[in-house]
Length: 363
Image 1: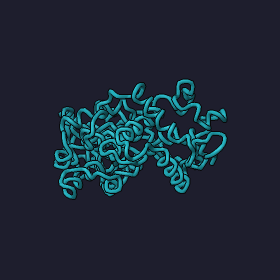
Image 2: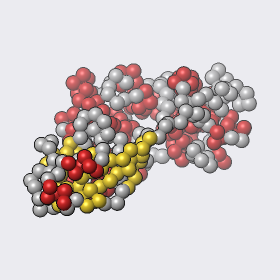
Image 3: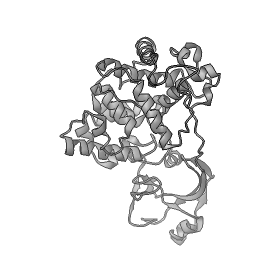
Image 4: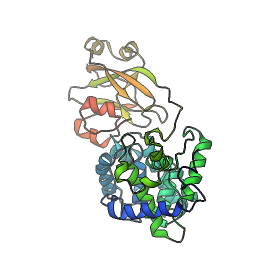
């Protein structure tokens, strides 16, 4: 790691305070301040936004955030809601494990902490779905705790600042960066600066220190940045381990009854699309047809195959349309759902696409 020369902004150097001061001043004058989860010390709102923003763009989150608060205005309200209600509001946002953990987390905040979020990052991390960075964001924004965050944007800013060339796919190297991030924080006595500094790092990564073609000319800390001095900011962060992508073909039964309702089943609690309402899924076309009556098999029609991309896998989906003559095309676990009922269900993105039910996201 190049933590010393050519730029002395590493741990123990006199220019460390300069970095925090610059970020705070820049955030005050140029950072984002209009987002609905900003300018608040309500841990419920901050936590909700942090969960929604994981792997999801701000523009996408805005509408979901407003709808969630309208239905679940407090952590107690969220804890009292059903999983189906939570999935229905989350539908289209993607990565549904976030919604499942969020619901469980709300229930534990109520049962373990009397409906009040813990005030330290260490305690927050004991809740379902709250990792170190999310816990630190809530603790810093809401309670002024001197703790570092390290989401994707912040990793990019700090690895470039320090020319930190440790492999981010290594847990040991990430721990080293956590240490560096902590050293760069404003002093604990300046609680307002800690919150603004944390927001400033997020804003720099989101608007200036971009993955490609960073805007170094307008960066408030460009003269402190070791990667810029090297002329290679896009070389950071370093991550050598690549995820191995796989592919799979699945057949989906799109069965409609005489009233135009669609047969949907709730997926198992584990595996792909866990806990969501979904068209029946099969490993082969033959397996799908075996579950149909002879009359339904005779009118089965193959729709165009389409690709749905997950984080680590490409799904090649083969829809099969059936105008069902029977009352139940599948097992007992499903039911017929009319068009006006789809909006309230948690549906995987490709099912929403097939049904024309709207929404966006990846799951």
